[in-house]
Amino acid sequence: MKRSMAGSWTTCTLLALAMTTASAIGCGGGSGSGTTSPVTPPASSTAVLVNMGDTPSDSVLECAVTISAISLTNTSGASVPLTIASPMTMELAHLRGAVAPLMMQSIPQGTYNAVSITLSSATVTSMTSSHSQAQQVFSTPMTVSIPLGTSLTVGSNAMVINLDLNLATSVGTGSGGGIAFTPNMNASVETATGNANATPQQGGMMHLVGNVTGISGSTFTMGTLQGMSMSLATGSNTQYQGMNGQTMSNMGMMSNGQIMTVNATLQPGGTWTANSVTAMMGSAGVMPVGIITATTGTPATTMTIFPNNGIGAGMMASLLANGMTVNLGGSATYGIDDAGVSMSGLSITPHFDASHMAAGQNIAAAGSGAMSSGSGMMGGGGFMNMGSMTAAGVELEPQGLSGTVANASGSSFTLSLASDSAFTLLTGATSVAVYQTSQTQLNGASSVSSGQNVEVYGYLFYNAGSYNFVAMQIAAM
Figure 1 (cartoon, rainbow, N blue to C red):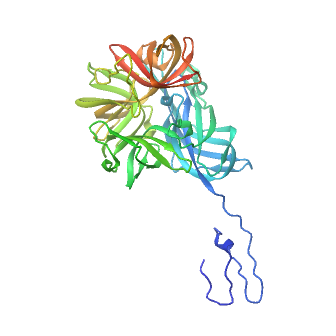
Figure 2 (figure 1 turned 90 degrees about the vertical axis):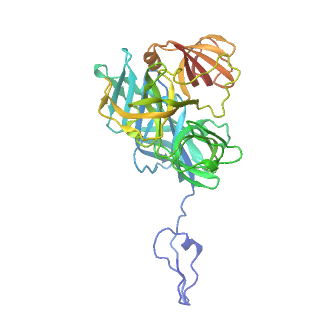
Figure 3 (figure 1 turned 180 degrees about the vertical axis):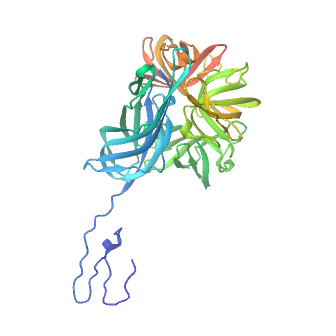
């Protein structure tokens, strides 16, 4: 506010300077006392990360939901909407009990006891008993109100809200044998720890896919397919690697538009620290991530995938959970997205290339050119053809499976799969051999024994008709 030039006006108070509106403020004159309208200072705000994930269902191959609105309800009953510039689509089934970042913004400090989310649409893809994919699109908006069992208290530390879609209770069989979808969700809250070993629910982001949108000193910004923009700080502990012909040994080799996968940690102050950065493809490239549903040739020359994530030219979040074609050239490179993971000491030798590739594996296919647009329907299940691309490189990505432990012995066991699981119906495999490493984390159990129902998360390998799984995490169910 400008100071008056008339000498009869006194200095306005600091309270007046704090006002955020253009309301008139009375300042005391020479012959009388002025009055100042009472002002309530705006509440301080703190960064809150919103994650989404799923409680897995074996029968669901993919489930993509489009989020159009999210709001929180504070203890006074007031609704505090989060800003969503445009609807955001995320595929959830591939997370298999984990969560991934959807958005982050600052909200007023205070206590909140409920969250509301509106899904403008959902696309569910499952396997049929005839071993084919079937899909149903739900376009009627669905709003879910979720009470918080533990209130979200926003203070000075960054917080995390985890929204969990229970696929097992949300997806069922509708009239005429079709797919039914009624979203059933719950929510939990965590405080960002800043620990490099933080779980995704605590802000420990894993395998986030995006491209570089800006570089400044030791910090870079990264955008995701969902439209989230993140600023990530690097340091002496940040690990770098390159895949698919990319070279990456330090941040100085980073460029705008470059496609990356990143592991990072949300700090209590609301900033991100990059733990590992993998350069996947240069600018103007494309990289879909998804489950292989079919391969052609031995070694494979072509594969069909159902993308659950990705980034780059031609990728559209609105078409996640639809099929696309990936062509494999003779010069394509192959690798494993195992940054920070050791596979030494195993009783098997993991292989991943065109000769060790099969339906059911989760992969990232990186190409230097844009993806071509799709054309009409694909297959007999009613899903759209997202398009096609030629891969310069393919990388094996982590994924999850669930089942019952059998033949547990030492650091290995057999995972028996449900007969109606999407993986079994897709591949024909009724069991998978699981191997633990020195880094395998056990959640909810101190050991693994026959008869337990477990969820495994790690890397699925294929060799001569058999599947082997290297587990990074094993959780009791």
